[in-house]
Length: 233
Image (cartoon, rainbow, N blue to C red; front, top):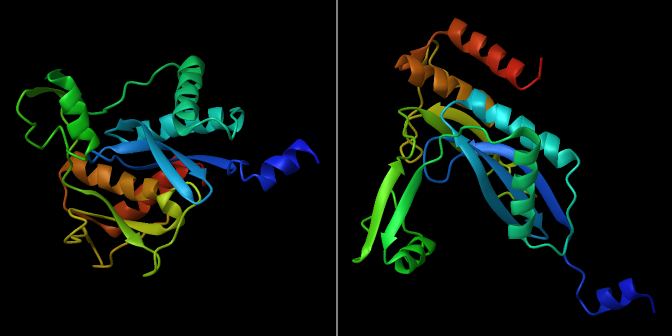
């Protein structure tokens, strides 16, 4: 019996690992983050790489990550931490490190307790730390008036092989996911986009100009520019 067959019968063949890079909202702020999505069987692990105030900068970072991914070598028996560390290392060796807008903080005092507290799901930028733990905010999380809203394509939960929200959602722009407050357009029709990047381009424009609405002409122009950025036209 061949070794591959013996391993298969023994149940030791690891699930094939799939990798994908994409942009979505940061886990800790309203910045646009580049992610490495790692799909392993039915499990998906999202690893946030860098985050940016501007979707244009995030797209540059994503383009670099995708170029690296095309020739990236990894093995199914590597764990997700090993794959992520190697992937980031290759990006930096190839392109250098972009100046990002990631939030950052520094722990002092009982750092072990602080790390355990964060691992339990607490937010070091917003939550009060336990006694003996001190947190210095070096760079606060990006906060925006308008952000990208995620709208599920179906009522039943859908799964993406690597966690890309564009597989399962469409996008609009608004102030709040919970209250779903979209921005105003001239003809009162809320635009939907299949691309997070297109919606983010609109949101960035509104935020940079402190506007609460777009004319039809502005919206069409911005959509054209967003498609140019993504190489769609």
